Image (cartoon, rainbow, N blue to C red; front, side, top):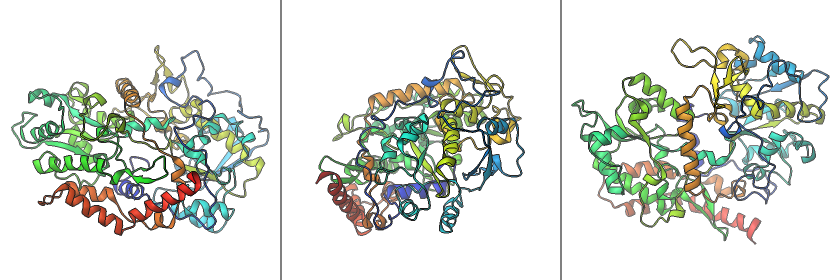
Length: 584
């Protein structure tokens, strides 16, 4: 996905998600696993250290395994013979292509595992097409990356023998990080007849960390300038945003400020975790104890939130251009240049650091930490009809995308791939892939925090390892290293890291995690494929509707439209399928 992808791709992917569409499985699709419910990995092996701040070893407790270390396989794998690994991943040629010379970073990896690397490059624009062409000619790379799990392509590749199964569990458990990752409920749901065919490319060590993928920044100094307090109810929130847009909170004598703004794809307006007090409303399909499937984005709790935002827009407190921004950067710039009072965006360290860096460039005379606050759980108002235990944070899988092994990879060959990927996915491996050699490129300070030792770039931003070593230009080969390690990333200001940890733990402890049954995601029906409704897009139109129609009238029209496009038929078919598999 990566979140820096152009906004049109983000919107496209969002629409697909909100519509609940997956590709249709091939005929005779095996039933998904029946043991994939509840929170992730309660029954899995103990999680290895995976880049969180709790996992950061003190300087004398390890983390030294880089330069000069002898190979220490996690499994008893013979690596005496050099083996070529054929790898396909987004923009892998930037790091390992034929035109890129082997540097110290690359030599360390090649020598550590006694391998050579051959690449088949894919990009964000062509990966789907290339994988389909390779698969059609039975020429899938030995390892390829995609995002087809649970869809027609996934089952087709399995049924036609395009991809091979992973080794059985007695082999896989020798690779502790991979073993843990593949035993989360979100991954086990897609085993076919008990057999695993893919490995997840982890985004977070724990799916709970997704709670930081939505949030609310606000201008503390504007509240003070206008002699206002943070609102305690819906109307006060609307009034505050209108004041930010009309009362010259920055004191420049111009009518140039915005009350509420959001990123260009504008999904934080409705997704859970932004306004958690309105309940679960982020587009997840939910199933109750009777096996009845509902769409949280289409329910009446979402109507409550959209009604508030419609009133806000009519009152003049919402960015009038929120639907037409060309990019997230444009929206971020508005906030960081001092034009927006309340801004909806991800609040994890990487994203907050983007805001912080832009702020420093655009308003160097204003202290970010003095001017900006985050809306915490206790600052959200009660909403009529929404009980406290119905508040919702964004639920998601702990991974996005996955990798597969082509059918030509032998049982012996796959072990070297697994050995390499297990290390790259480990705490030690991620630190190396993302930040280089300990003691040379980074070190621990007295408090056990990682500190960058690379010189700053000409622009004054912290140096990154790929500037020094081109072979480090694909750090997310196996996991999304930047996301996995962002809470310990030495290139992010420690104040931001500490702030985000505090906020993350507060959210996890005070906002319920929605009851997602991941087995539901593995069910596909004809009606699910045929559904073309898009509640998210329609809610944006609802917000900007200035007619005299009531909210209830508009909502009834939207529901009727969704049903003509197959929304209720999809829910009914999924209910029947779920009940047949797991209830009856």
